Length: 433
Image (cartoon, rainbow, N blue to C red):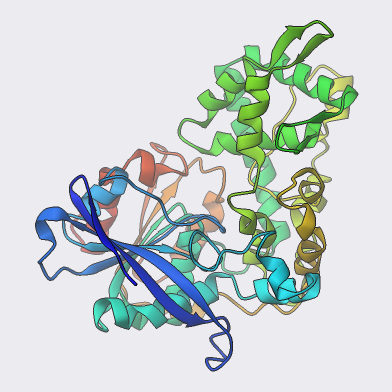
């Protein structure tokens, strides 16, 4: 049953849909999808075109906005917006340590999760589009992983699209996960260098925290085991527009004096566990590398294997010398399934996904080369999460795609830049810029 309600300046409607788990077996098992329809209050009775928003991730539900902040206000000037919780996220048949045991053991769970990639998400969109738009094509706005999905959409169902807008999410069409991470670690190192140039006092702070973690066992209040590798992974913050400042503020209150000596402060531990826990988005950890799988090669814990090629990220070696500790970024490692209580029951499932060798292709280069859907993409020149060279190579293969390459924003530009970013990209799809 749908429910309609109001927030400042907008009218919201909860929408529920039923789709096949496996779209190649439409008579088989089904799952439930949830999406939130948003329309400007003054336009509620108007016949407007539709824009479907695909969130970044994988593994995150759509934004829970209040009113019309960020890009949403610009979109609502001319669209009805559908904020889709992609399958396995939010209210769309969530996949986590509590629900996945309903599937059976790790083998059954891994087979189930193999249906939670961009190809299935696009087919979900096509399954629900007639119910939402009456059959008319809609515009897709894909942020980050949502942009990966948009490229899959252009590859497999372009007839469903009036336009495609991509922000920080042009994937390589043929790179293996190993190629992705070999490009990623040098980018992350540059981001860490830029952070220390801005906040040189953090060099000693980070080394001190790392040394403490190498010599003490620390378990956070939620049961997360804080190792030095886990601490380094806080570098994921550095990919956001405010991330360097957030990391600095976190490091500056790490220690407190206690009767037993110096210890990591409760405030530090509380903030760290909120940043590191996958309790709210376990699917991100489970299928993160699977989104790059397209052939018979397993991903095989790619980020962990490739990290060994970059010894400068090794904390004990760093602390044995006098160089700054390097943080890491957007990467998933097997130790996370030991440290995080939200992931521990799913470690074997994750291992089976990492070993999988039957991933179907996600992109069709020939179809993209013949694309006739108006499309535009923001490529953030210093993006830590998506390689700029890979993105531009893909942009050149999609016929008619127009790019806006900028270093004004980080990966979250569609949030930080809000209406201006979306306005620029929509104009590019209409040859107005």
